[in-house]
Image (tube, rainbow, N blue to C red; front, side, top):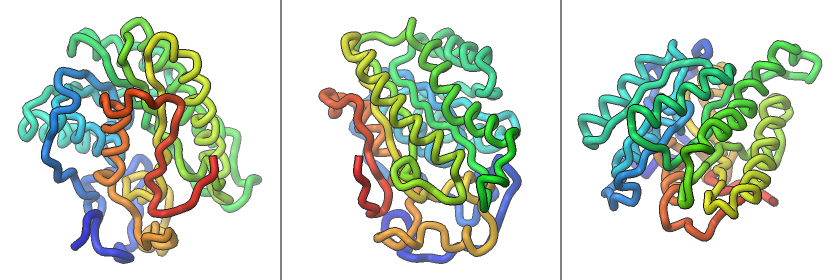
Length: 288
């Protein structure tokens, strides 16, 4: 068994209704196996989509490294969120604040930031990670309703969370945005999703320039195929079973293999990096 699972392993055919639950995935994504260096000791992080997938991996690694975390998630994902809190508090001895709600509503985004500061005392790290995707064969099949939902979930909340966080962020604070490999190579069947991910790259670079004088660093991560509930919620059949097998490393990555990128960008190790995107994608060559 290698890190992240067996190379080119085919998973069982499976699907779930959105939002997918990590608890029901076969196999479960792997959790972190790390020796903590306490690089985030005393920090407070707010992570959207922190109940499962990449967000879960980030929340657990941050807690392992000494941070208290607040995780935003949809109410129907309570079972996954509760498990994250259990691990954070029982295994790592940190605090995990649960913030269920709809990030498509600006009012909730503001409330989530304020609750984090009220309950955890401050905010040092904002991870804009939550996203949705719906596969469609043609652009004609993308309804106006789907288009609005994709943009209202994937890009609008990033503006709202950052705006709400600004009064609490100070020199040395960090913002990390999750984009995607599809922002760089596109995706014929995820046109609206990949479009929002391209917007996130530009948002990250522009915001980094805007906040540099304040000493607030802004970076992003562009994962390739990662085994998360989003995959079993949006793809079906053989596509799920063979997901990720077309990249050079021959398999999908695990959230635990992506989370270290977020740790690096949040820590002092990345103190001279802003406006940059990291690419944990199994070997795809990306320009830009």
